[in-house]
Image 1: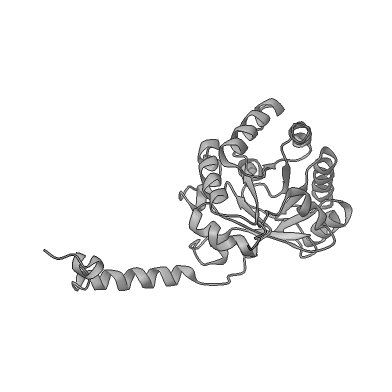
Image 2: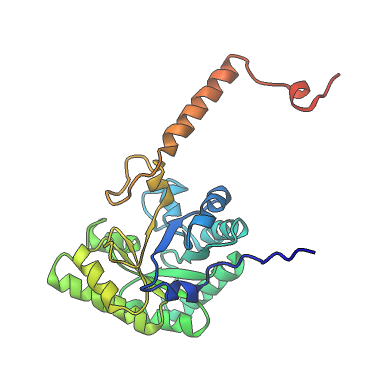
Amino acid sequence: MSVHNQVKRVSVPQLVAYKGQQKIAALTAYTAPFARLLDDALDMILIGDSTAMVGYGLPNTLSITVDQLASHAAAVVRSTSHACIIVDMPFGSYQESPQQAFANAARMLAASGADGIKMEGGMAMAETTRFLVERGVPVLAHVGLMPQYVNTMGGFKAQGMTDESAERILRDAVAHEQAGAFAVVLEGVAESLGRRITETLAVPTIGIGASPACDGQILVTEDILGLSGDRIPKFAKQFADVGAMVRSAAERYAADVKGGDFPGLEHCFGVKR
């Protein structure tokens, strides 16, 4: 009689323990097929609010809802068994109060089965991070360039380029660490700042357009596969041109159909009349 060991997911405490030991490899996913393909290679999968732009063609991340992200997260959880699954808290679902944040985070995790949530915001949101963590919700903080703050930041611009702004972002990251965040995403910050924050914090930093000194990196999967059209960030290395493959397959399929080259029931199932 053989005994099979059940493969366990990477846990939030495991991610924390990677600090100084190994880099954290993370990507986004919002559908079951992509999640299945990515799972074994990654430490963490994020169902990001970038789903609004990548999955729904919206101009920014601001209009996606808790219910939408929870549905996508549930699909990702059902389709994976290895990576730690984290889901974004969408704009407007946590900023009003810590109580609002907990209600929506609890709803999100209960509906999806995800392992934790990600939340954007500086020092002002550290109290909310503490409130959630004390009530059993693992929090991945997100500072620097914060897409949900695009209107107040004046667009998607690099952050921490002056001494004053760099100090502010460092304080933001430290505040979330002290509040109990298990890691901090650093997006769009100067390389020197990303390195400094990584050296300062005892929890992992996960960069996106930050510094290779960060404890890991997260990117939007479609950006590295050539599926994001013309809006691919400069920091997203393209590892394959899946978009070209899909276009080619669609064109070949359409040519077959227009030429009458497609099977009927008899060919597929051996059905005869």
